[in-house]
Image (cartoon, rainbow, N blue to C red; front, side, top):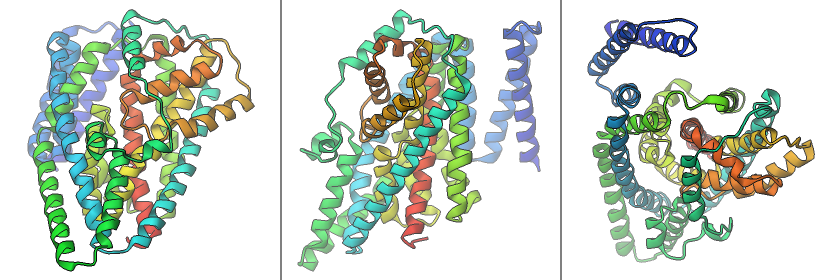
Length: 451
């Protein structure tokens, strides 16, 4: 009861502060900064008290978000350098991914010697990914055509956005959807954080180990892989203790660099994206969960922490090790989790694909171009291919957006203006990516009769 009352009081005060802040910013009401400050700091104090009593990492992550937003808004010069905490966390996470995927996949495949199941899971997962991401693209199109958010918008590009865009475009590389699935050098794949290539190598290694006839050699490698897997999960526990600091630092940096008033005439775009993401979850993911009889309460408890990390850091990779651990604890076999979840990071980016279709049409609307239904469908067909297999590429969604806008005959620099709010939109689409992949893992497990 005490925890519940604390939570209600905290959320109420945060809601009151948010409402008063917006009204004050819009000059609808004139409210003393002192009163706003008192409400804000009391709400933060209650949230910290709640996290102390709750003794839960997810609670501390949420509190860290609020603290980060406050620091970034009130003390931007302090908030900007705090990005280093997020960068440290992401670096540590990247050290976990390759050995964790390798060990869990090898044990899952060679330990059970069911190579046919790997092929079945692969086909089912790809089929599911294609259907769901296609629906996501269509929801993005429908949403932007309903709101007409781009009509009348001025895409004003600031120098900082031009500089950021040029940095992203400078690292643009040729992308072959099929060829880039396969590693040419496993060390290079690990360094470049190419998750799909690591998965392919691990699957082939696991199959090779399953075919080894010498039981002694096979057991030795399996024992090593099992030990490595357990160590990496313990490593994950240690790194996750730093997650609240990373989340706070990421939020402080984002708010300090963007500012609270950055939205301007892009507010309709951000609102349309979040509305479309909510619609996708409500109209697609929840019905899928009902069809496969997903235990929603257990599922929400399992993904709460990974999704909050993904939202704050705008990085799906940051959530991967914890998501794997929590889904396994939920009862999904490790061999299914280790195969489907990381594969989805390349083929099942629901939030990103929805964003790409929505943002492309937004830019066309703002440029005064009226895209026909045929043109929009053709654009979706292109995005179905270009959005696959690029999860490990920094700024990949922006690069795809620029090339899509150019293919429509528009000035690619029009896309630069969106970078002003890209961090805010990235939080939403990354969260939906993680939710979608966690659900996909359960669906394939259910399809295989493993849960």
